[in-house]
Image (cartoon, rainbow, N blue to C red; front, side):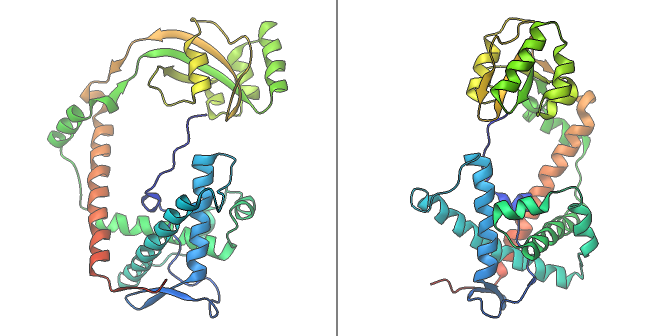
Length: 310
């Protein structure tokens, strides 16, 4: 239900294609060399399919990239794919130096609850490349763990970070809101009839809603004008008075919502001692991200890369 945003730094989320060759590529054109290791057109195309699929899901929702209308976007994704391919080769070279192996069983564990067939059908990726992609994702985090193993944050550093980023530890004020999300207007109208007949909103949310908030009876917490929700939902929610339910289903890109307003709440700053462990973890992660980013940049700078695309 929240707005979808395309995260440009897909690499930092682990969305990397693999460095090993998952299948025969004897007939595939070589488009680059990284310290002597070849990047083939097939590898590049498979990773570009992943980037396109991710963009379509996060930005377009149910839409598809159009080769003519979205030519500039596709070109940027292609350049991103190339850069990520170079870096993934470097990661696998580091894995060889550090004798890091990723077992098939680790991939199986990561994918045990995923609908892989549907993903492959929707994205157009081949299974062997996708499984190798997952190996690279696991490798990415294993190397990060090794590179950043000695990085920590002191309490004094955490206190400064807390003061500099107080907004992260502040609960926003606004209207307490719950909702029930369903796919069709008919479903929403049927549930609305039950609400008007006296049924409990939270129980109906647990029974019918498709939003993860169903586990909390549809509770989304407080929202305000600055909350990151789609316009149709936010405007309808903020018009309600405490205890009021929308009289009609509210349509958005996510489906149809029935919205209930709760009490108005004031913003609340959590004291440092209350969130100290979270602050330390946040700061450590920030420091580790920077250290690992510097490490990856150093690999790039030292690498001998031949761009053979032209």
